[in-house]
Length: 424
Image (cartoon, rainbow, N blue to C red):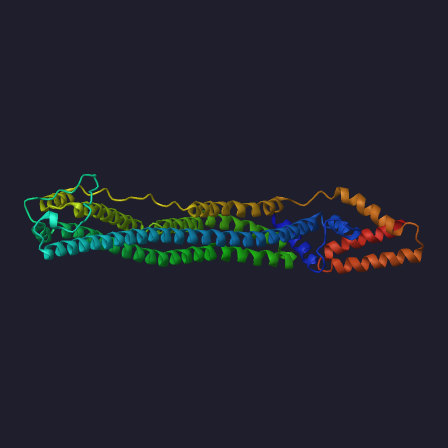
């Protein structure tokens, strides 16, 4: 805009300060007269103020809607992370509890077998036929127990008591149970630390949102309100608002968007913190069950040789492959990313109508001239001289109120009124 145009516009803006409401662009006889007298710049002012009003309402809605969406997305992200942490912790707890049950059963099996053997040893029975009537248990394969006929029953019991095959397998179950319990504690600790880091990450996201969005949008709200309250600043405010929104959009696309995505990725990673410990607990629980199954078979064997062979097989058998569950994907992480990417476009949408007002020049007032002439003529048509003078004076008084701060425009409006009053 050229300097002389800015000067003229400043004067026109000044008279708008005295009017309440702000002058519209040719919606009554005096506003039309003002548009004609000012060359259309009252219309520019009116358009600027209206655009600021619309922008203020839209900006507040954008602020409120975006804040609600951010709060919801952030809470969903935190809830998803907590749910994942709880899920991994439950996996670890279930595995450790399973390993504990295996250890308890193993201890009972060995204890019951030793009690039985001690009883047989104490009985001093010499032959199998003198043994108490007991059903011969069957191993898993279905074959009957092999008992040595060369040794008395109490001697067999003594030999089996001296053998540590069952204790060795029991020890393996206990080792796995203790390892599973350790993994449970590691999972719980990892979940607790991740929960604390998740809260810190959420705070970092909220701080970034406040610093880079809410602060900027609050400043824009103040700027728009100031332009509305001070029409002298309306067109300048439109320009400032357009630039502020452009800067805000760039900041949202780079600074805030990157910060929110970084924290979302961090929370997604934290959600998996107990993963390794939970998998380890389940791996140990599976090995405990495997050792327990072999211990069950060993208890059914009634010779030292058979038990020792199974114990050796147990110790030398390949270790089962560790459990590796897939990571838990967090839908909220991608949702927060989508939200952050949408923010610059929304800011740009606020800028568009302001940019149109900023680039628009004053309207062509030629059509207004005929309207002003007709409207003013109608004010005086058919009136007596006293009545016409009264109408003229009323119009002049209102014009002087409206255009008090712009003598040049006022002079033009007064001339239009006075000339029309003479024509009648």
